[in-house]
Image (cartoon, rainbow, N blue to C red; front, side):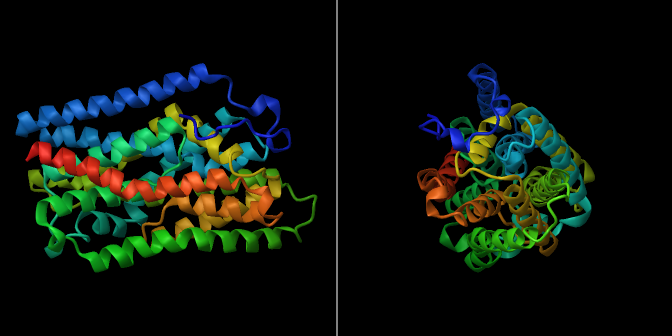
Length: 370
């Protein structure tokens, strides 16, 4: 089922040459996502039957979540380029893929605090998840993100990971096994506040851009802001996925965070971005509001600033929420009718469903392995 149930009005559409070239190519990419998800489930079952295979299978599962993350989340940094008619889908996705990979690589140096939050910060006693639990968490997050990508929904990988952790934690240790205070302060509060901050910041940035001389090369600045947003997204999301990989590496006795985990995650993110990034990009580019070049630039600057700051502070915000909030903010300044609130409502519903859906999928996988 497509999220966009009606054709975009002519006034809201980018130039005709920039619209995705038919459904055939998208269908192939969506099928690839489905095959990846199915293959990961099979690997999980094989690993349960042969415990010695848990470490390599776990790394494949970690890469699978990074792949799904790239397919769904690359849109958050490049949608404004396409929506404002600056470039084509393929060029935008290539640009976002490269910048996302650089951000994920850089997270090995600049965002390790997020690894601690998602590897042990939510569990009573600070214990890390073991291989079976980590495998179940990865499967729960992967399953939901792949399903959302198939339907064109830009959901939050951070939400999916959080829901999966809580689902497995509750099944394993009951209500007392989760540090609810840390969950609320370190994850729920930043996730809830970030879209509202994005709306306000995007409006402020747009007001500042209005005084910029019209001869200023806004398209060039728009490209740079898009790259900065994609870089910040990789910087914030990479460590969350690496944190789950530690559940497998710890079996070998490693006490530090191996650099190769960041390289695996970055490479898988880039592959997922390139293979499956178009489906969700069309939703953000054409489904929420029409964007002018200056508005797209303001939305990207606000997104990159908020996500980069959050990564530096170790706060796991959702690039999905921030980018969507920024786009809604610059669109709503022209009046409420300039925003497709039906699409916004569908996005909000998907965000709410993500936590329990990923949690149930992860709990089911953990139960099967128990």
